Image (tube, rainbow, N blue to C red):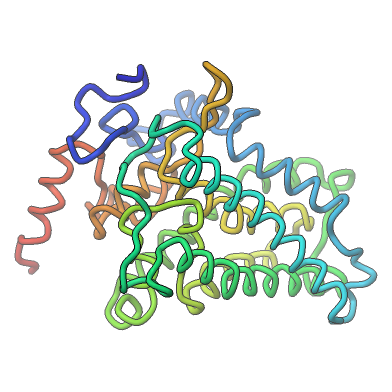
Length: 328
């Protein structure tokens, strides 16, 4: 058993992090400011996804983004450049992780939550889970990622969005950077909760939930309506002064974060002892049990509305009990 593996791991999982899982202490009562500060600092580990997303956003803005002067007018050439760059990101990140972890099994099943293979079944487009996931990711999701990002460049270029710089507003620049992951989690919970209601689930979100067990291509494999809604959190910058780096950082929580969080692996191994955390067991529980963990580790809504699953057998029993308890 790996040292990181829980000793009370339910038998349905091949691997799980230490259970019960814990959420961020930001909303604990009474308040725990020191504990919250430590959690925040750990969440920005130099080898953690959050920091890597920000570094990638800096690189993309500096060297792989059309100038705002070109973006003052919508033209095919610079929008195509954004689309091609995002395509490369998906092929390298989602495609690379799929090849490394799923197809070639370079680390076997180490740190894998569920050993169930990617499926070939009629429920998927083309009868194949991987082909299905790639189709919806490289089609609608990539299109709307490029649409929202291009809209924002055009808005910055024409003054519809208030643009700041680090030199002029260093405190707000850093503060906004720290707030973006919390905002992303806030928005994700509420749009995700909405997608589990009535026709929105039956006609839209159910496409994503065909992935009971996920892989890197599963994160953005969703109905076009869901792809459109997911990326729309970027509209917050029409209300909040920002720099395009902030916008790219936010949209990377979806474009890059969805593939990495849906890998189905807790870590990717680096050498004999090193590892980088990738997966999201909190969300893996949602794919497994459906009506729980709608948000993220850093939002309190699942705890407040009693839809939190802590990964244990007791957590599964509480979810089952809630399903059969009459309302009202």
